[in-house]
Length: 128
Image (cartoon, rainbow, N blue to C red):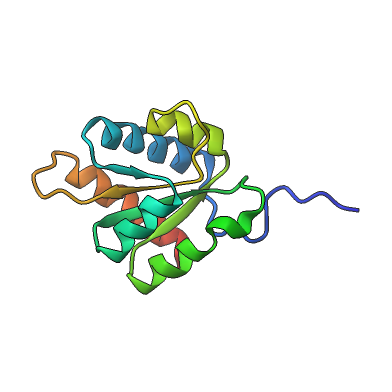
């Protein structure tokens, strides 16, 4: 039996450099109240067209519990990306629990607009 380095269903997976950038942005978004945490909140934000981009954890077991989110994100033309660890995602979100999904929501008055756009572009490059 061979052990795979990454789950095959978790695509696109952010590399370590992009993961660091995403985690930093998520931390800032949490401080600015521009972050929704959890699969249900992400789904609501996508349906309300508030999401800038979606971040999902690749080490969720079973992965099926969040595989409806990439489909929803594609429907709404919102880029999404997987990061390696739900534990690290939870820390970036500022909570003590592991987080399987989060989304940065748009705010026209935000000073993070350019950073969000840079990360969004980087995620879109992964999807191509």
